[in-house]
Amino acid sequence: MLGGKKILIGVTGSIAAYKTLILTRLLIKAGAEVKLIMTPAAKDFVTPLSLSTISKNQVLTDLVDKGSWANHVMLGRWADIMLIAPLSCNTLAKMANGQCDNLLLAVYLSATCPVLLAPAMDEDMWKHPTTRININKLESYGNKLIPVGNGELASGLFGEGRMAEPETIIEHLENILSPKKTLSGKKALVTAGPTYEQIDPVRFIGNHSSGKMGIAIAKELAERGASVYLVLGPSSINADIPGVEIKRVSTAKEMYEACLEKFPTSAIAVMSAAVSDYSPIHFSKDKIKKIGETFSLELAKTKDILKTLGQQKKDGQLLVGFALENHQEREYAIKKLTEKNADIIVMNSLNDEGAGFGHDTNKITIFEKDGQELSYDRKAKQQVAADIVDRIVKMMYA
Ligand code: CTP
View: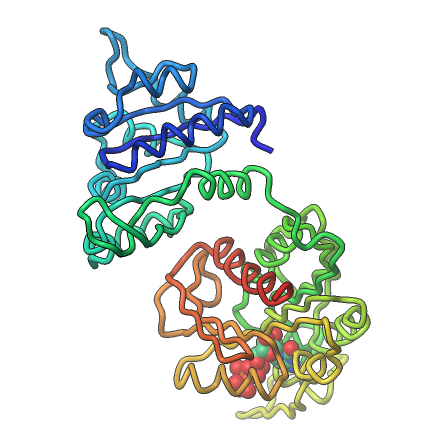
């Protein structure tokens, strides 16, 4: 699966660099093209000569090489992926702060390809609040993290912080470069965006939902092989995605009807739309004139799509709902989980900066029917979608 892939490996100063020799050999055997960059400190642990011999490529260490400038921009463009393995605490901190005092950092800052991180450090360093902040920062930029292992550390202590084994790193590289279509053959129903409830020909009741979160989920499900039916309320976001069929709707009633038709044949349903809870009882064919000092509108409750699907759900179907709250968030999310017979409720709080309507980021907590509760950091919505779909996949194949 890695045959022909161009992999750029950054090596930093850590004893785990010995594993990079084995990793490079495995990648070359798998048919990948490997180029390596080392920080000055990395050379204390492995030599450029051993890495260049194994990779069959010159190993770069300096911004200036024999009087000529190493083109860091082109290296980042050449690569299908940049892997930093081992990633030391020091280089991590520099990356999180945009420092650029060696070739590896210059390439990292100018790389346009995906970046994968394989940290290696002592457990106390790994758990230090500064390291946590730095890791979260890089993840929020879209860099992917390979979890550290647990075991004997260079200090002689046992704990978390070991760099992942070469075979595990290869699995992560394969997942990014040739993602497994874990949802192939599955049908998924997704709702997104607001609904507009017409009052008269020119007015409606709506909300600020942009549809970004639901569209990101539809994209993620499609990328993992599902055929997705996206029921999309009025949204200006481009949802033209391969593998996603779009059904445009306007009102809560139209959304309800579209969902009820598709749900029986769907294995997964993700209700992320901000459906209007109430709709005007009467639609005025003529534009309503401003006559009195006050104006009342009689509204009737719309049908709860999530709840209805929860009542119809059969074995093998997985139902996901959303909860946008601004107080007693946890209690309300758990209540929705049981009341709507959902398998997963994704909660976001209006009190969190960069979460909810309109933002490009979101911060979620996932509540699952078996009582699991998972809180995530603020991330780009596409990454939040990947976290949600990870949980869906995990639950489907549990
Ligand atoms: N939902 C739905 N159909 C509706 C209303 C909401 O499918 N008519 C779904 C949303 O897509 C979301 C979840 O239900 O997944 C939100 O739950 P809801 O109870 O509507 O939350 P609120 O609108 O915040 O209402 P409440 O005041 O009951 O908390």
